[in-house]
Image 1 (cartoon, rainbow, N blue to C red):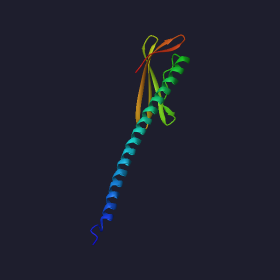
Image 2 (image 1 turned 180 degrees about the vertical axis):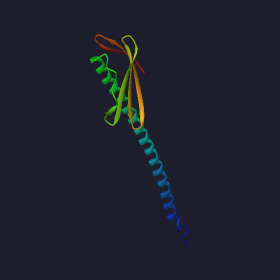
Image 3 (image 1 turned 30 degrees about the vertical axis):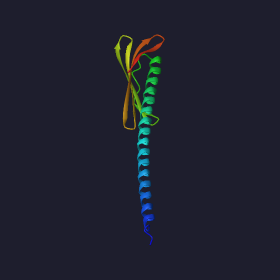
Length: 124
């Protein structure tokens, strides 16, 4: 008599179940990692876009103290714009905005207008 008959099949099924569980956990981990990468890409893109809007606004403000901001337009995969509002004599606030992937970011700068060009006093 062979009392071990059928145990090979049972062992094979157990190994398959364990392998499928391990692969499921690996797939879940990879999916979470990809979500984090997408979130990081969105954050970095928004920072770069608001920096671009701010730089363009400061450059235009250096050329013309009466410049009032950048109208919204497509820049790469996002949208950028800016507006300038007076805070007092020779002092303005720039609000640079960016949109990317359904999310928005605003960067504010307090700027003093000097004869040699705009001087950024602070960023928020």
